[in-house]
Length: 597
Ligand code: GTP
Image (tube, rainbow, N blue to C red; front, side):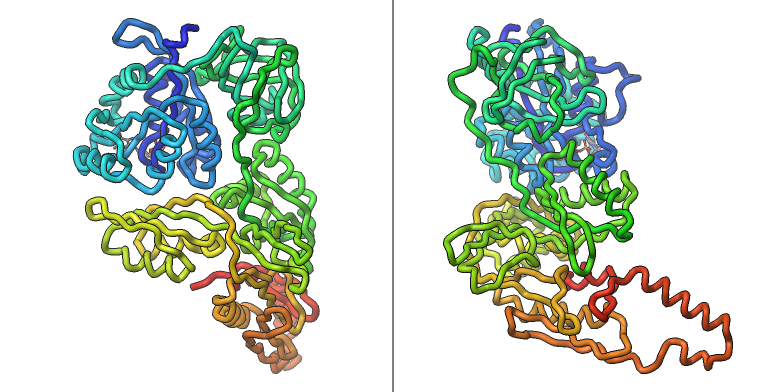
């Protein structure tokens, strides 16, 4: 194929600004699918994605387009996930193409994710075409939004394309802009094969399917390829493209985007960002590496019913087949029994996995409070990652801890700015920037991720009545005065309640947890002290008084059925409890105790 007739692009946008709708329109307009085949939102095809209206996995589609200049072009669209948890997937999808459409809802304007995503596109040197969507809405203000794009992002928006992805108005102009304003790819068809591994997923019929962007050379059926980083070789089975239907082709050349299959067993065998080359005639140099996709948030997942443990193990293994960014290892908790410690890219990722386990596999779960990954420097100079506060060794072996920090961008209407600043300050934030775009403020803060994982989103939403938009990026690990706080119930430490906190927050946090637990744990026949402790030092204490009478005492021994009913009720209540030493702790207590309000 003639390289000058290829355009590779992606669409970057804030959630709900119309990325999927535009992608569907482009497929429809270029005839990739007949109307009958055209389901709503072809590109977002996971059930959950559809329901939540968010894109998780990057998808790709090849469009054939005859432009006004009379030439036929191949347009390859790589869809990128819109959410910050998947920033890494955005990053590598963008690296596989030369340009982006920046879609902004003309009735909303620039939002936090617009910024985060467009900065990533700028970073990989994309040519960017601004597209103002939803101009059919009465509230659309394309001129104001153009100004905003110039002011806030610094992109020339004079030639922004004004469209309605919903009605189709202006969509042909988008296709012309792709052909005329985005660069064509470069590459040498005669050089040894060099391709970028963009994505991979598990297909029930084909096994692992690998999405690639060819840089140089050619990829053909039956070719023996080598993955340069993974140091593995495979014989290619199918080579093809998505239209969005899978279509086999004879070969893929430079600038092209397509897929192959090669009897690869697990998604985990395909390192995203790896360089694929010909085994016999390998490329001299691999592509520059990507930073690996590291889980940053961990939490424990335990079956409510311990008999479901095996089912949970199977379900987690199945999910992992298709999501190599999610990690797990077995965990035993004195309070919760057998379960798994799982690592996620962020909170949304955590929630998606939890929901899929409950919904698709029908398992009731207890999720323990999410915790970030700490870097633990020991007195012997070694660094270890700490995934679970309960695993922290005796403080005498620890020199210091470091925690991940993020750079958070928040866009918020003026009226709510005060509340947002207070929230960020309360969470140990450091203000980096505060600018205005019209009646909205853009605030940039550096924050410890540990202060954000639990309920920052919820607080932000309620403070701003849902009008704020938020995005973040991990920036670095920084030292801090971090300590492990244990909660002792009846003088015994409860592992599932251990947390790492900043020293300045320990007392308030400890007091709040003890007060909460006092209400959450029912009375027993004896007094129960609840204590928060740093090392051996108790910093907060509450006491649950003893129950005065046996529950059946008030039945006067007379009414047998009533007595039996009461006992049954008590037994049913017990099922949702976890025995801890002599104390029974209700399951909900493990999460509720950690909520701050
Ligand atoms: P994510 O997949 O979450 O990133 O969202 P998205 O950006 O793909 O947004 P999507 O295409 O799902 O559109 C969000 C909502 O806006 C849907 O309800 C669309 O029907 C609606 N929408 C998209 N384009 C237009 C438009 O041009 N006009 C109007 N009125 N509504 C639109």
